Length: 168
Length: 246
Image (tube, chains in turn red, purple):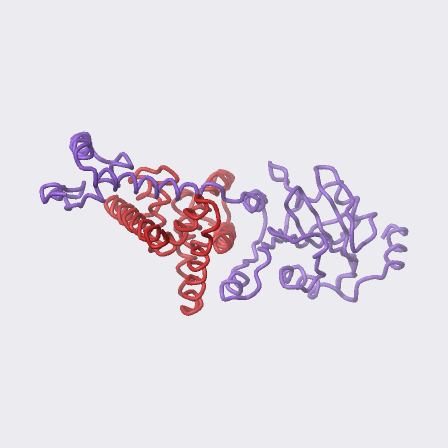
């Protein structure tokens, strides 16, 4: 299992865009997402995967585990400060275009979602996965995906509406 | 929204609220019967319709946010994945440093090429070929500027040093489109062989080139530290060595 087969390498390359979005959905930070993707690929190349492994599923699992390791190791206060800074930054762009303001709002709202809800929403709403496909990749029951996506949409909608009212 | 409207169950038999129903409707996961029922309610209930519109609007924003991730890093990762027979030195510790607030400038993955002659099927700027070997053989080290190689690559030798095992080695930079690589190759019985090649995914501008030992090239610098038997050659010494055919 030390190295990837040629087919697994190609599958991993094909998976990179989705894996990158998954990294972003987990980290909610583009720089962290790039780093997480890099480390995930390195780990996959270093450790390999079983010959019969589903590359998308396996790579997402490795990615998620690496991110869990990472957030466990981070200082809570540091993360809190970064998060608050990002949210405050999003609220100071009132002079920008309406679209830009809305994107800032949704960025902040997404940051407040639990990572697993964000990941499920991105899989379904952005990548167009069915609940069954998302459940297979994220290795949770279909009902969990349905629930996470719905709760994410609900929180996002209410957050955006609240923010819009507050800034009106 | 009436109590009756909440009396709906999902595929696992769990009761779901309107937000769950709308979410499943957006995703095309409602069965025909419930889709028809919901469509009827949407016609009759402005509040429900507004909620659906708000959810769809949120979806559009999320899609927009995730629609244009930079792909330059993907190209570097693609090259890394395609490079066979590599030993990965994980950059995990470096990521950890960044995550805890240290300066973040670039991502580096260092690979040690053990079987250079085995070519990956796709073009890989890390691969030692005739053009790169010739540049290593003949080009003097320099602090700025690039020498154009075939395959849309730019090359710059950075320094030359003797290895402890008697070989001559050179640190070099290689640029290919938006990707930058830093490596060390050693001359082994007349053939240049890559020893360490690092992909600098987000290398800064040329003017910000940093010599070996700076943070993001620590793996290459470590290799040089462990391998070099002496300090790097000066320009005249290097020039004489090149002229003598090594």
